[in-house]
Amino acid sequence: MKLVFLGPPGAGKGTLATLAKENLSLVHISTGDIFRANIRNQTPLGVQVKAILDSGSLVPDDITIAIVKDRLQQPDALGGYLLDGFPRTIVQAQALSGFEQLDAVVNFVLKDSEVVRRLSGRRVCKSCGTGFHLTSLPPKKEGVCDKCGGTLMQRPDDEASAIQERLRVYHAQTAPLVEWYQSRGLLKEIDASPAPETVMKVLKELMGR
Ligand code: ADP
Ligand code: ZN
Image (cartoon, rainbow, N blue to C red; front, side, top):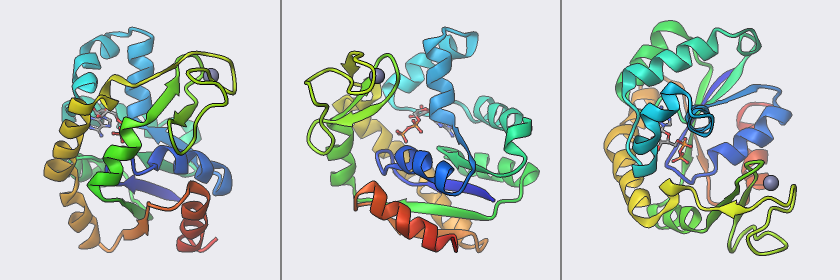
């Protein structure tokens, strides 16, 4: 199965992808994770895109498309995957349709006010990347990762100004993809406001599992 997860930042696509890859045995491919790993490892790509990610803008289409194309050709992706965070523009969607045949696009629906609440409270572990939330999923000890004892931090793009920019970019560039995929008969919508386990149940039903 070849799936795309679409939706605003903070809709829980990454969390759901982690649950779904076990439940539906798919490879999880997140462009955001790929960029962040490159930034962490200070690769040439990472150096090139760091300021873009920090500000909440989009990495140029040509760079992003080349990375995804390459990733989808690796052997583990051949049996099915879950694309999280790509495509984010019509140009990216058009490119993807040129080299891949998708089974479905799942649109995670969440209102802006909830996006802001979720993102502004999000914290991640510096060492292992595990995610927490100040109110909905607080760590046992403030500022410390439950899993590995690492220090929790706020992603630069979860700061208030970057959240506003990500929402602006989402509405301007990514939201038009909802109609684009709808008109191609691929779109499935899911309410992203309940707890992840609930969203996962609905997703499984949606996928006929
Ligand atoms: P979010 O939590 O906002 O859904 P991601 O973790 O998916 O964000 O992506 C983080 C950042 O990585 C984006 O704000 C953007 O700068 C960059 N990025 C990720 N995917 C893409 C893409 N498909 N096209 C352009 N930039 C991207
Ligand atoms: Zn940790």
